[in-house]
Image 1 (cartoon, helix red, strand yellow):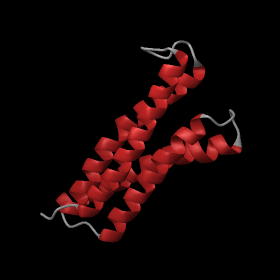
Image 2 (image 1 turned 120 degrees about the horizontal axis):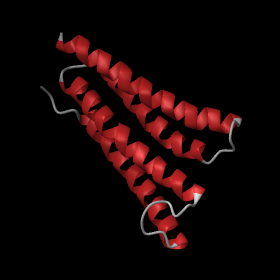
Image 3 (image 1 turned 90 degrees about the vertical axis):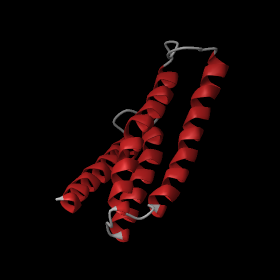
Image 4 (image 1 turned 135 degrees about the horizontal axis):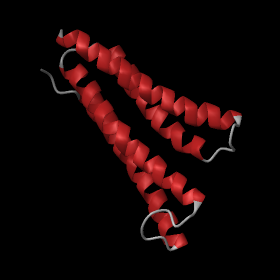
Amino acid sequence: MIFPATTAFYAGLLALVYLGLSGWVMASRVSGNVLVGDGGDDAMLKRVRSHANFSEYVPLALIVIGLLEAGGGGHGLVQALLVALLLGRILHPIGMFAPPNSPRQFACRGGGILLTMAALAIGGIALLLRAA
């Protein structure tokens, strides 16, 4: 088994994105004087859910892709999955603030969800095929 250096690099980038989302939520909490929950503010709810959605999907995706890389998965596939994951996680919160049913909402939120799910699904299938 090798050290998954590519996954580690992207994990570092994703950690910085996560910190950015955390700061975005904290700033909203301070400016809106909301200590817990969303305070009934729709924008606050979107920030909290963007942050939570990130924390729900990224750890498992990194584990799957990291195991794939450590198990000798192709560098091109690993890189593509990580780029898709990073782009998906950046696009998603942008789409959360797009007008409902707008092209930007479809492209960013929908695209972000699809990229994240594709990275997880393809990574999971590739990992199963390597382990079989």
